[in-house]
Image (cartoon, rainbow, N blue to C red; front, side):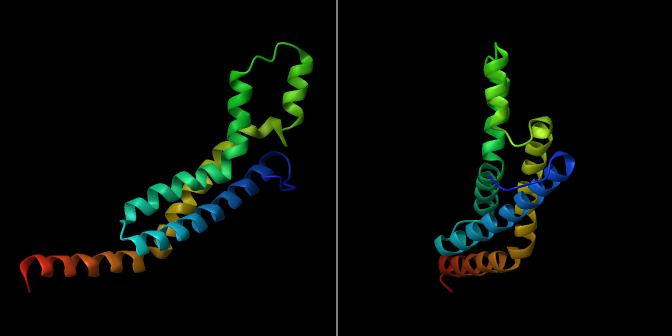
Length: 135
C-alpha cells in the first residue's frame, strides 16, 4: 500500500486497521450499488469482502506467494526479492491480519448499513408478492 507503517506487530496491526476501513468502505459502495440494481445483501457482502481483501492485502499477498513459489537459489536473488518488501520478517502475520481486517470490516459495514438495505429488499418483496396475487 506504500504507506509508512511501523515494523513488527505494530505495523501489522496498523495494516489490519487500514484493511478494516477498506472493508467498511467497499461494503458501503457495494450496498449502494446493490440497492440501485436490486441485488441482494448476499451480493453486497460477497463482492465487498472479495474486493476488500484484494485491495487491502493484494500486494503483500502477492509478495508472500512469490517468496513461497520462486526459486531463490542465490543470495543475490533472495536479497533482491526481500529488498522490495516493507517488513519481510512479519509478512505472513501482516497478510493474515489484513485479510482478517478486510473481512471484519465488511461484516461491520453490513452491520452498520444493513438496516436500510434489508428494509429496501423487504419493501420490494412485499410489492412483488402483491403484484403476483393481483392485490
